[in-house]
Length: 297
Ligand code: CUA
Image (tube, rainbow, N blue to C red; front, side):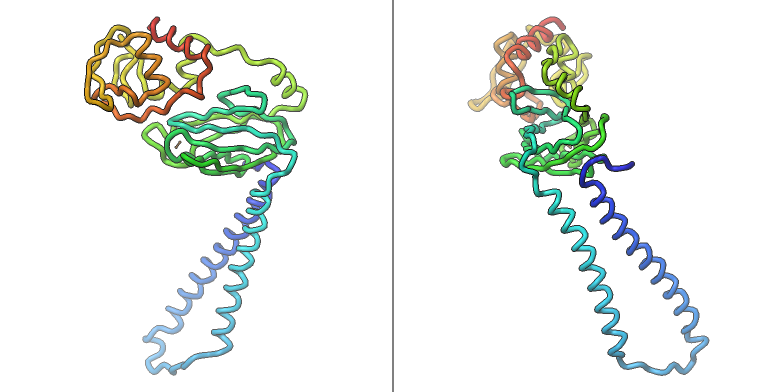
């Protein structure tokens, strides 16, 4: 697929350059090898002449590959530098990765589940992870950068064509890794201004569970996934593991609230403490809505 970022041409150029050289060498060496095996077999040469070194040949096969490899390095390096130097005027978006979804925060405090940007303008991404190593990968932009827990990584892109592009996680991050998908929506300036001016209506009802990634780990039909099922949740008695041992809790609003904001405080026995804290990922209204939906299930 054709790249649509301002630097995708350089990435593709370096890729085809290295692939081309590799292909020529592979074919060339294979042909020469087969020819030599045939031409210089012992059958045809019962009394071979011995050769002891050739300065000309050895110089050639040292100098040519060195130049080739240096040219590959130069090609890759100039492209890499371009991809690391973020233009001054770039707009900033904070990207938060967690098991197993992406979320985005804009300078005006707005948040979204898909990345929405204007066409033809540079965007600086600050990449954070709430839990484990993830990798922000947009093939159409030729952009891939790790989101590392405990540090902020950066990347940037400028999309030169409006459209919707796939966002993937390119680092194995647990059993739902392949479902850690997202979308980058690149809008023409006018549409972007409209998007900016109209804060989206909050997703409500059961769809909010999917939008916030809850349903990747919690089933609604009682089946066991990464976390306990939502089925029959309210009023259920659960043994939980906490720092000072185990205790029994009855699932009520207070327990749900705590389990969403600080999931590791009281983990239902038999499950791993892998859920990331949702404190900065949900607004107060969204938290209230999720509780309401869970109570209604
Ligand atoms: Cu996140 Cu794979």
